[in-house]
Each structure stands twice: as structure tokens, then as C-alpha cells.
Length: 263
Ligand SMILES: COc1ccc(C[C@H]2SC(=O)NC2=O)c(OC)c1
Ligand SMILES: [Zn+2]
Image 1: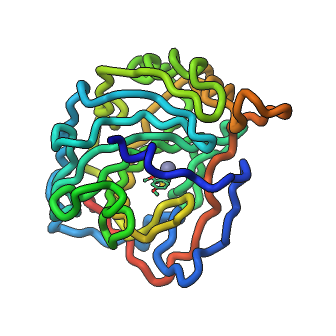
Image 2: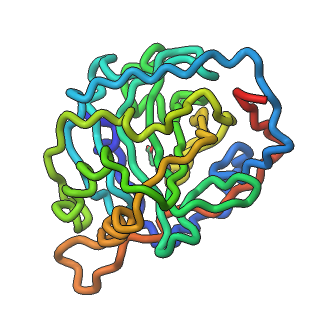
């Protein structure tokens, strides 16, 4: 069972606006991280992602992004430490990006937009048996966010870029194995921000402990162009729509504190 095949996203408009704030939502994501207002937390432990590339199973175009799915029936690929009290199991990663390099990320740092953002999605396997349970519980999920900037070609990402044409249309799937998602983390994973937030697409559940890396990773212009060659639409639809701008608008902080692992 892989987490992401369990949820069906509602039909999402490319510039998915959705409800500006989920009804009664006071911990919605994404947000702008105002660095000078973040608070250093000396109790954060080192973040320890331990991923087994053999749990990688497939790439799927779900009509909103492309998801790289991991077998999450065992604790072979986990995330511990940082702000987390429990062990979280990796179930998928995906990206958000723009139609141009000027925008595309969901979170911003002092209003700075990045061309894309990676989300590594994990669920609390100490407390829950299945992803579906965890996604409805406060702090049932932990998502690592990594900003992408245009620069050198990312050799690890290229293996994924090479299979994207096979999942051009919505609902297409291709087998994808032995991919170590740790290669997509920045060199420095000790410097990050963390805050209590939500899913950024329906059902917008307020279940996420966000861990946003301070250091971006570099990908080439051409690699990001392949992301934009994907389609929101299935092969049957007459009008094909490019998969771009699949990010949510920023949400009010509502008094939340963003903590930092560094001074
Ligand atoms: C019903 O469960 C869901 C629904 C949607 C997403 C995807 C959202 S959440 C995020 O961080 N980015 C996204 O696009 C999800 O991911 C954990 C889990
Ligand atoms: Zn996401």
C-alpha cells in the first residue's frame, strides 16, 4: 500500500486557489517564513532521514503533480529527530513548480519565491497503522520541504527526469525502483525551520509538522523544463493543459511561531 494512491485529489484548477482558508483553519499551509520572526529552538535534535532505495516503487501522475511512491508497509524508510518525537515513515515525494523560473514554490523566505519546491511526505507509524489514519490526526504527518533553484544539473534528479515522459498524462504510472530520495536533500540538513501546518491540497488537513530546509538544491533549467512538459489532463481529454503553477496561495500565520534549528 502506498500512501498517495489512497487519496484522490478533487479536480484541481492549475492555479489551485481552493478555499482561501479551510473553514475554521488556523494552521494552514503554505506560509511566508519571516526569518527575523523565527525563534531558535535549542531542543531540536539532528534530523535523521534513513531511506532504503529498495522501497521505491513507482512514479504516478495524479493530475496535480507527479508522485514518487514508496512502499510504506514497513519501517524501512523513516524520518526521526529534528522537531519530531516519533518515527515517521516515508510514503511519497512530489514537487510544486511554476510556468516560469520566477515562481513555483509554495513556501517563501522573506517573500522570496523559488522556481520549485520538493515535498517528502512521511506519516507517524508509531501512533498509526495506516497513512489514512495519520492524515486526519494532528501531527500525524511530517513533510520535509526543499527549495529548488536554477543552477547546475542535478545528477540524482536526472534518473527521475528521464522517466517523466512516461507519465505525461494524468493517471499514468511507470515502475521506478532503487531511487534514494536522500540524494535530493541539500548538503546541510541541520539548518531548517519548523512549524505546525496543513496539507496544501484538499483535504487541507491540519496534520503536518513542516520541516523546511534553509539550503536549496540546484537543478538545471532544462531539468525543470521537463517538469513543465507534464500535463494535468488525461490522454482522453481533448484539451491538454500543461502541468504548471501547481502551488497553493499563501495562508495567514494566525499567530503561529516558526522555529529554527540554527541561530
Ligand atoms: C489525503 O492525503 C493527502 C492529500 C494531498 C496530499 C498532497 C499535498 S500535501 C503537500 O505537502 N503537498 C501536496 O500537494 C497529501 O500529501 C501528504 C496527502
Ligand atoms: Zn506538496
